[in-house]
Image (tube, rainbow, N blue to C red; front, side):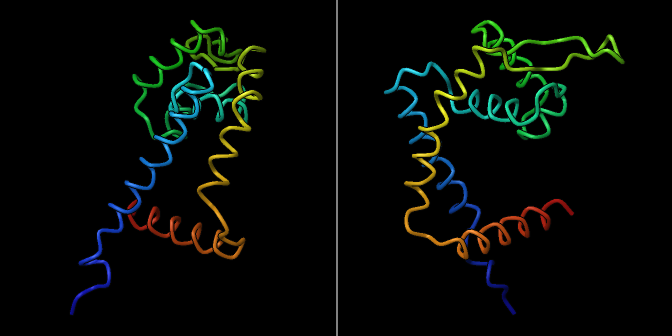
Length: 145
């Protein structure tokens, strides 16, 4: 007996959709002159929502390896958008924060991100969103087991 997913490469659909969204975002970023990559935006977005997290937590949240996140944070620090502060409880650990310039960049870029999200979502409903999240969470959890 075959399983419904045996002949349906759902991961290919997920992957191509993600690439399409990333490409649309990067194109808008470039056309608007934001001087950011989509990956840099993802870090900025997480830092906006979680100020003062460690690089390791940031790596986990973004599913990127620690050396990649370190390089990206280095670049964002050079751009003046983030800063590292030594943790008070552990002098070997650094916490990452957006600078005021980083917060300004977040505020400047967010409307473009929201526009792309809305365009992608189109006329899908809240009910569609709830089904989508449930399915994606289920796939994620199944793979994580």
